[in-house]
Length: 105
Image (cartoon, rainbow, N blue to C red):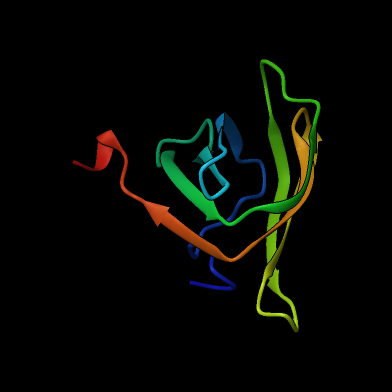
């Protein structure tokens, strides 16, 4: 893990779904990394204790230029969804974890 994120490239990854739960609050993203390639796979990311959420432009295709997380001096992560097309945004959170998906079972 690098700054809480799995060691994969999020460049040209596609966000397939976004879930917000007021409990926590928690945000989950299903991201297809290596999209449109033979080794494409789904990564589910869970962000807990989310604050300062600003997200926009979610539509039928959501391609990231990158997804970055940096831990601040207050021990919270500053997470940025850099958009190539569609979804983009920023938020802060206490924890980041990659969680198993149905495909992993």
